[in-house]
Length: 111
Image 1 (cartoon, rainbow, N blue to C red):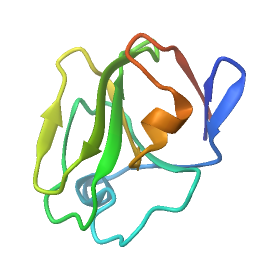
Image 2: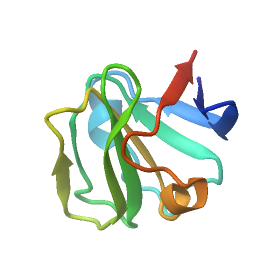
Image 3: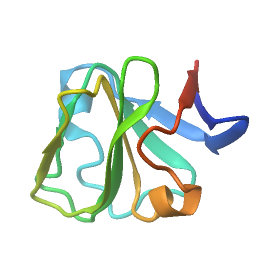
Image 4: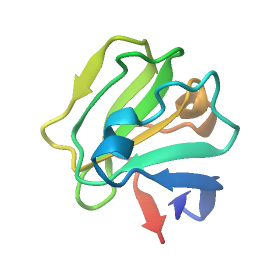
């Protein structure tokens, strides 16, 4: 899976969280996240960082791929949700700022 903003590829390593265990675990247990890595949660408008060892950046997308929620540096042991969201992306802290992602940006997701 690839994710683009305009014609620029944002992530070169996107993991689709499928199945209950993988969706529940997400990035839990990791000490770090490789550069260019993101975890994609389809049909997910809420996440938690319980038991995580590091903060993460989070964006949530509507059904058309438009960013409707942004949370930078989401600390362990917190939750976020957005009623407008359909899908969620978790990524390294600092990726939102580095990629200049903001609400209303249009992303394209390709399998």
